[in-house]
Image 1 (cartoon, rainbow, N blue to C red):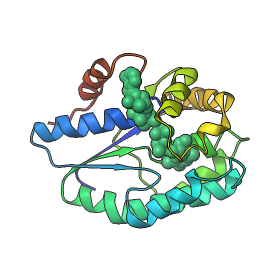
Image 2 (cartoon, rainbow, N blue to C red):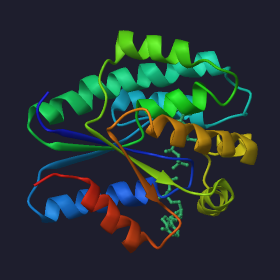
Image 3 (tube, rainbow, N blue to C red):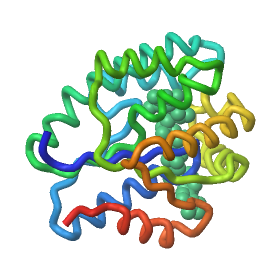
Image 4 (tube, rainbow, N blue to C red):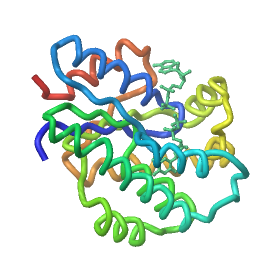
Length: 203
Ligand code: ADP
Ligand code: TYD
């Protein structure tokens, strides 16, 4: 793959979408071709799977079934959106990627890490060049995410303890691979955006 592949990760409401959008706008203003995308979703088929996993009752799917659904969505996203954009030499910025499955399905409801990684190796097999982890207190994240509202609340409804485990999981994962940069999300969006741009050695 050519091009640069950047993911944003973090708990719900941490400011990923805001920062992914801002980084895309900044890099475009600097003259880069950018594809801004998201998971679950980012391609027609994956957006259909998004509705299945994000709407409905919290106990609608087991963690194991979610691993399959999120990985199926990711495979379609990779084939239809990410690989073609990287092949065109673009910067690809995705709001969530495989680390979200490692955390939300892999560790928040028992340890399914082995299953997540085996399926990832079999079906996805790539990691971002850079992963920006926006770190935030889960109480603050939940307050922000709930204020934003909408119908995609299935994971928010899993509650504060779930998001607290997720935050700790993300921070632990970030220490295991050099592609991670951890950025404090508990500041105004301009200050966070400056750190995000500095973390990307694009251009
Ligand atoms: P995520 O994609 O991580 O769920 P969003 O970027 O959608 O987070 O932000 C969640 C909510 O918090 C939105 O309403 C957004 O406008 C607001 N928000 C984002 N960044 C900040 C910030 N640095 N400070 C305060 N509010 C923020
Ligand atoms: P997202 O739209 O990024 O929500 P938010 O903006 O609130 O952070 O993601 C929706 C939910 O999907 C989020 O709660 C995390 C969850 N998710 C997983 O559980 N596994 C995954 O692999 C992905 C990509 C997302």
